[in-house]
Length: 251
Image (cartoon, rainbow, N blue to C red):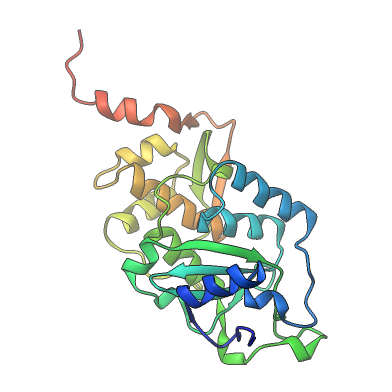
C-alpha cells in the first residue's frame, strides 16, 4: 500500500479508507519521524477530546503555539485532506499549498481529523534529509489570521476567556493581512486602551463573534496582552445578557 506524500492533497474518502485499513493515517508511516507527540502537548489534546473539541482547529493550533511544539495537522477542507505541519518556534508551516489562500467556504468548515508528530523538519534543521521543498514552507502569521477570522470558531479561545481586559501589543504589520473596516477601527482602538471582551463587542459595528475572532487572531500571532486584574476586566459570561438588556427602559 502506498503512503501519502507530503506534496499531495488527498480526497477525504481515500484518507478515511487508509485509516480504516491501517488504524492511522498514511503519514504515520513516514520513516525517521517521532512516533509520539510531547507529553505536555498530548495532555492538552486529550483535554480537548474530553471537552468534545478534539477537531477544533483553533484550539489545537493554540495548544501547539502555547507549547512551541511542531505537529502535523491533517485537516478536512471541503472534500480534501490538507497535511499542515506547524512550526511555531520558526513561525512557519509546511503544506503542499498556501493554506491562507484556501476558499472561504472551506475555511468555515475546517476541522482537524488527526494530530500527529511532524513528518518533515523546518528549514535549516540538521536532519536535512527530512526537510521538505522550500516552496512548501509558508509564513505562519497570515494563516493564523485567516483561520481566526474565517474559520469555524466563533467564540473566544479557552486560554483567553473569562474575566480579562485586552490590549493590542504592537503596531507592526509584518506578516499580518491588511485589516480594514470595522475590524480595522477596533484594532486601532485596542492599541490605545485596555478593554473587556464585552465592551469590544459593543463598539460600533462589532458584535460578540467579531470581537472573539479579532482577539483570537491577535492572541495566536503574539499581538495580544491579556490582563486579569485590570479594572476594565469583565467576564464574557455576562456578555449576552448585557447586550440583550441594552435599550430596555429602566424601572
